[in-house]
Image (cartoon, rainbow, N blue to C red; front, side, top):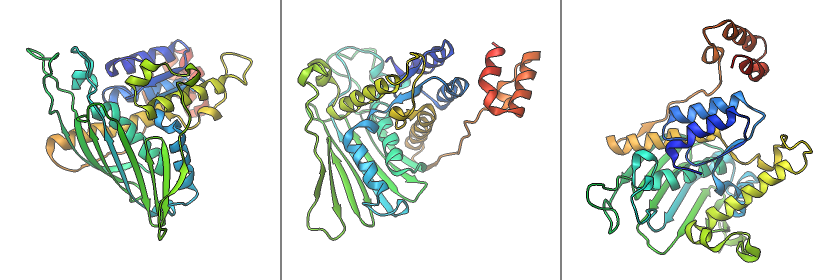
Length: 340
């Protein structure tokens, strides 16, 4: 856990010395940093390399994803609209730090929008092809941050995404609701709709008279000191509970393995990979460009596959590596290590 401007370099170095990596969101400050992380994770496939998009593990969203897969709102191609609304207080501290600086990864788009972008893709199985965004910084000074330094991190954004399967996504992220946190995620389709409010899931079939209660979050994480009160007061409950569940899944990934260096994938199969982090960063970059140019931006497809050319070094070992990739792509890791 550190400021986003350090995510890429620390994650890449940690993988390089054989450490598993759970990186906080976002995966770097730009696509080039995220791509370095992707390549490092591909060099070391035996190590865990995931991004902290904790909403994937929130029980309400696990249930929502299952209901979508089972056709509650219709087939995948029948998903029409996703609407996300997040209202919360300021993300700033009482002194100037990286949270005040857009170039260091501060702001509601990076810190909350990254979760939303990833979650929508995770729930629907679709990715954005075109985006449009409006990003604003309304609060440029506070009682504690004023004078020479001004706040550049955005405190409001609204954006739309056209998805690969035809769904349309709208999202509004607002940091101007002090003392309150509210999050609603709607997924609508031809057969009905689903909505997560806070940590509860509701659904309504087309033609039904009222919403059904599908899942209610009644678990108290502070009971039994699972989460201390200070952390619970800083991080909104859905994000904290999702993180708690994700850490539990990581623990399960190591329990069945006698060799402490080994792990099993199934408990963390739902986690966001570095490739997912690269996609999220591509959308964020496109939204910033859209807001600056006041136009829709088409996302260019990117290929994260490691080719022989990206690994070749101007040496005999580099030539061995290139030939090895051509012979057997599965030998990339051992051949690459021999070149270090």
